[in-house]
Length: 252
Image 1: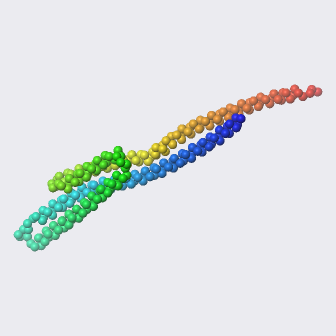
Image 2: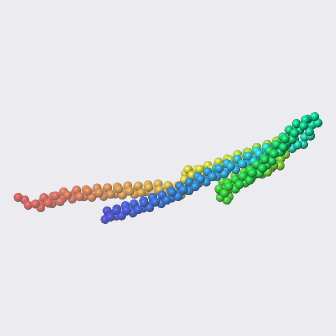
């Protein structure tokens, strides 16, 4: 009877372990795929954030350069030609004004293109996050600050104030970089440690292995004890049988 119960128990235990291993395998495969997608998401958002911050810095620098260029050619254009200057000098000044004006026009077109890239990049970044994501709210606020400063930069006429405002924009962009690094670090820690379901499965698997090991050791000890008792009983029975057989034999 004990052997039948032991066999049934071990069979059920083997089935349970097989089922548990199948579940663990399925969970791990699914969570491994989730971690892979999360890593791809991290790489994508890293590129989107770096492009956006780089375009903001480039926009601030280009706007200041364009304003300086406009001031330069406007100043040259307002200058009256000197009476004693030659025709060659006059033509050279006109060519310089034309070149400066062309460079300013090219700069304006580049600023417009950067504006478009900034807004497209910001939309791309936002699509990586859920609405009202707490980790992204600070980044959004800092982006709004940068755009307000860029709008103000276009209205300034004083050269020194433009340079100071440009530095403020670069400082705000650096803060955006710090926020981005915090977001990326958090995601990397999640990838490194594993998904919540994976961690739970790992923890419960360890506990189940400990319990199963304890059960198996208990069964093993019980089996050894039972076998020893059976062997001792058998050994004690053999001398008794031998004595009975000897006494039953006829005397000569």
